[in-house]
Length: 390
Image (cartoon, rainbow, N blue to C red):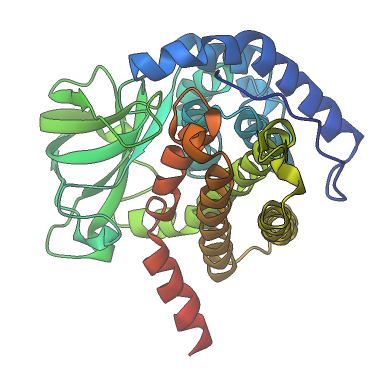
């Protein structure tokens, strides 16, 4: 069993007719072309590149990209939210992370920091899904402490010579364009960071293994190595020394994206549990009739509704340009903690079957654990929110 059919969620106030039409199109595509193959991708440890190309051909990614570069020219993050929600609704976690990373996390770097020549070179492929993107920040010795990265880029004429390593890189195997955080001034911390777009065919660039993870098995996560990699100077985003500010500027949207996946998977788990308890019997009656079952479902429903309301508020703040880093951190913290609690409670209602991978609830449980770690651990989210209060 790879997916669970669930009723369409009721329309929320933040969405308009065009958003719901988009949702229906995404849902049909996922049901007909993605979900039937997902089990194989989980075994393969990677989502095929043609899934990104199909998403591009259908206009599901890159909606913010201007029309002259192949996008829809519609700067409305609500379309991104719908794509993430619908993928999670069908328990396709690896697909969700790969596409939302490309669409929500990487794309802003190309839209906001590329010059005209760079946009012409890269945006059309990002829009049609033939140039898959990744962002390389984390290193073996530097995760949440971005200023502590060691990967160096030394200017050598018209190129930078890049040496170092990155790890836990989402889309690391598939990626064609990798937005890479490097130190152009190793004597500085924050002020020494720059962002280079490193292309897959760069001499001296190598991919390591596709890492084996607890969950998200169909999502390719890799180690990347740079051994005297020669990167053209024209691949620098804006200027040297401004990379840390670029990363921080984009973190609010990234954390909102993680929250979308968190709330949507929690809602999916709740629906799975509701459907299951109506079918399962014990002691001669449906377990849906037990008070404990109703209480657990009530708790989960309440948490999901609260997280959804918070998420929708923050989504509109992002659309209106008012979402702050602190607010996004608070949302990411709350949504992913709710995700973990709700999925755990829902799995418990399945009993032993909840521990069997043939039931999607088991995959949701394994996939959800990373949400409290990536895009800044939840301990870092608490620090960000706490600092804003004191």
